[in-house]
Length: 194
Image 1: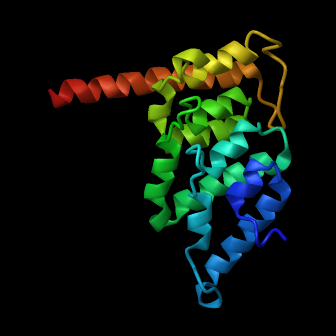
Image 2 (image 1 turned 30 degrees about the vertical axis):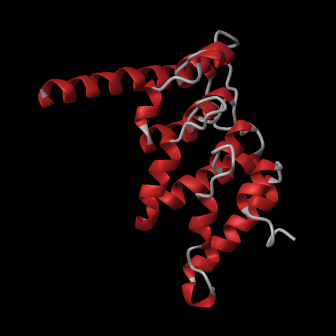
């Protein structure tokens, strides 16, 4: 049955274990392109956009990444898409996307869902501009670091809160220092461009 349901649908329904199996199946089929009728099926499915403009990665992150399948599938999508030349532009489009319901990027949702530091890093590397983007005013008009600060700090900041053993303070420091560096980088570009 998972073969008939696409990755987007499975992520929307929270069936992440099955979505992960489908992803692996499509990835393996893409490695052996001569065995499939459509070698671009994986690319089409991971970059499929729902009516609400969410991609599968948005759907996963909206549900949070405390489930192992959510965290692993998120990383697998990012790693696969960044390593295949034909997927780099669609990956950028997905990471830049701010669907209208909340106007949040994948990084915003990862911060909201207290994702692992490695996932936060991968999203920042993929789209550092998301660090300074704000969500909708009626949702708080917050950047990812402000979202993280609002929901996870100052809780038990020194306590390791994920499987990587990363504390909320470490994650917040990463988001805030990355934001500061990105703003400085953009400022330098603007000055040199003038």
